[in-house]
Image (cartoon, rainbow, N blue to C red; front, side):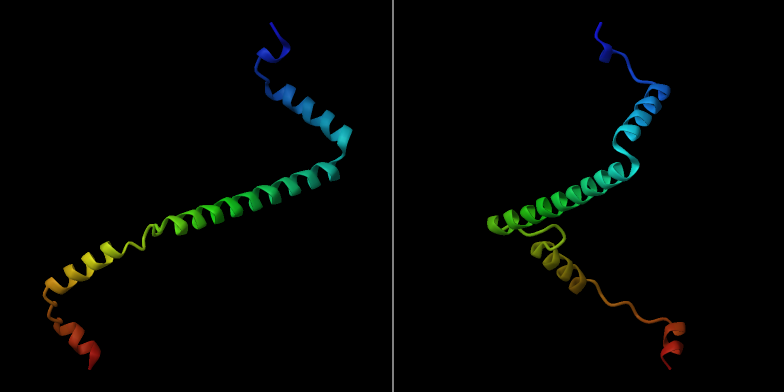
Length: 94
């Protein structure tokens, strides 16, 4: 059985964390976490930008801007009769 075959419990994780802090120092670990967060944020922004560019190149529209769905909605609105205003609505306008 290899040493990594057993799961780590909370005590082992705390000991490892203390050793890492002693070796590298708190400020260096904080800077490392901060730079990792920035890198992940930039990566997500770039990948979403690439996704948007590839959709534009293919000629696809983004979800929610479907021209066909908008035309169907307008057709439904045109077919439905307008509701007559109630007395309370008429009083508010006066």
